[in-house]
Length: 235
Image (tube, rainbow, N blue to C red; front, side):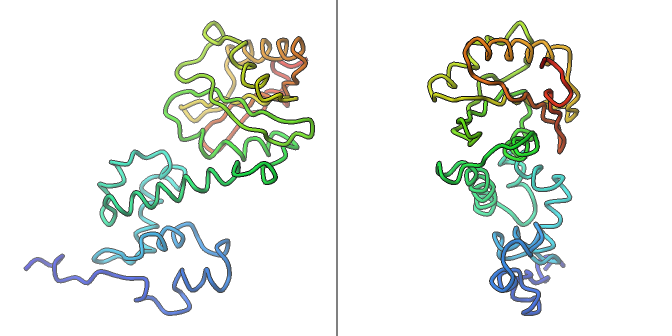
């Protein structure tokens, strides 16, 4: 019999009562737990040599944090020691529920008061994309989010983007204003000359349609650039 076969599987219940993630969550609230502890609650059990919290820590280190787990393909996670199909599905489902929470119902939709609010709404998801996506955030007269829509996917440049497509959904939703965002898969959010040209075209079209273009965000890995703040494409 191998050493691995003789090693016990570590469970959350093997921890001291006051160190168990579920008990700490019930006592202190989920915000008091580390990301690894929250993952441990989903996993429930560890593997030989690692309890569930340690497995969570390993996954976060391997994939570069929760954003990396979000980006990772299902098959990549399944292949990790201690996961498998069921636990991977639970992780992916939990991450998706967190993403959907921000747009669950109209009265709970966020109000955008500045670039940081808009970036917080989309950066988690958009920084995980392996291709460029151009997304439009629709706002009402009070800057409350009405919805979001991806308009383009793939390598973007000024000649490819049809400005009318960007505003079509905004007109359909009767949006008073929009915020445009796209990601740089390289992780570097520095705006390109094409980004500036596209922004200028969006702003001009918005004036003609009486739909305000409040900003154009370029999303990188954990960072973003506000074209409005840098006065790139905005006058």
